[in-house]
Image 1 (cartoon, one colour):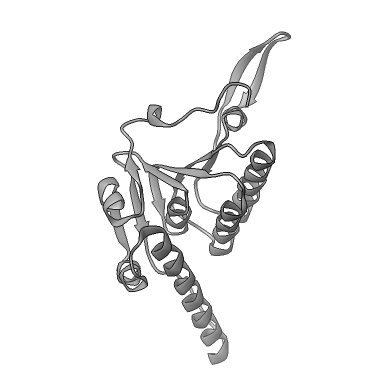
Image 2 (cartoon, helix red, strand yellow):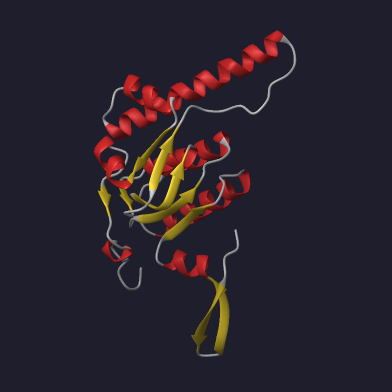
Length: 200
């Protein structure tokens, strides 16, 4: 992900910093692009740092096609571990594991033309002995069940309703995501988000 730098004026003149660093000062973190181990490490460290600084709400902006299941669950577990609430904001696309992270927010906001997609876990290619293939299938079923349980708890839908949607790979518009329980509200603009108090 290419994150540009911005210029900031200080008492020593102008200095350059990443937009991501500036957003951190507003207690905002980015989940942009594919979810990888590297991104999970970065997000987890940022959230732990912000949680240690204050119990004020953290905002996580999400625009992601999903990615690695283990990395996604690591981010999810950290979100649930923190002592401060997390507001998730879908600013384009929250698919697959990113949809789980979006739904996990204490408050879930979605922009009008954004969408959320949920599906069963996928495997690209499996080869080897019969038992190896069986182990892979069993692992996928455990992941499927865990994801369905989480989404059921966050949406108020039954596990069966969730599995019916994930089996077919279902995409929700912003309003449909609210109606299904994946999101709490559609935001007309980011101006509707609360801002941290000065000095926090």
